[in-house]
Image (cartoon, rainbow, N blue to C red):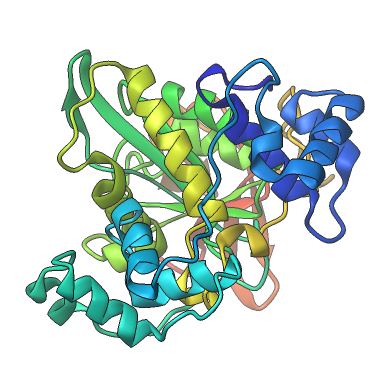
Length: 378
């Protein structure tokens, strides 16, 4: 997709940082960002010569880069904390180390400076405690998606849609949406998939537009994802920790961008989200990554987004049933209730080799239900 008007320089920066990753496919990145290879190499050359300031248009005033000052340690730390007031001692230390800021103090010293400067509340630090983290082995194996709680703006209510890679914590999207409809999510995801490729699996919570109950365990949105070859899973009801990385990401988004601010237009929200996403991905050290930034562990998926949905096809000899009105199918006198969203679609029934008498029901490559022939017919 072409450069986004509200954050052209941010997208150039993201392109450059992804292109600098080991093994990056420059030609594929240029295509996904909607630019020519000539222009892509131009921005790479400018970045190599001038850093981030080289990514601005020549006719515009260059963006300022983080200052490297020889001022006393406390003044240097305070400058970082004033720019990123929600960062803790470890993040500030890793941030300064990454920028070769000379004699960088210990994280505990930085936390002490934050206390002395009145930049941290005592009750906030008391709540901080370690926890066990789990993550997938590679980027794009799992993406976590959610709507952060909506908030009022002058033009209505903004519903931030967030999408985070489980392995790297890379934020693929922070979108300022006017609603939470499936059509809105699909249009935003289409742009994301064109740029970053398709993930193996996505997880989301229970509720519209993801799916919420037996009759709506799938929705038009999740069926679209399945047709793209993406496995879909849902968090357990009343267990938000299943979406822990996305929940934590949304909390950080609220603290850094939304809380205490007033926005008038959706474009104002999107501008703020885009600028912050750049900081989150490329500047903000992440404790779970050993103080590295998410971009250091992320690479786009090699699975390209198809502009046309593939046809629904099943292996030769598969027992195929067309889902009837209300989401029902029948097999050997047994009726099975599926999601109402499947009405009109074909599904396939395949025996389980390890469980005689049990058939799995598939939509595309996703198992969505089972039929147990050992149970009595109702």
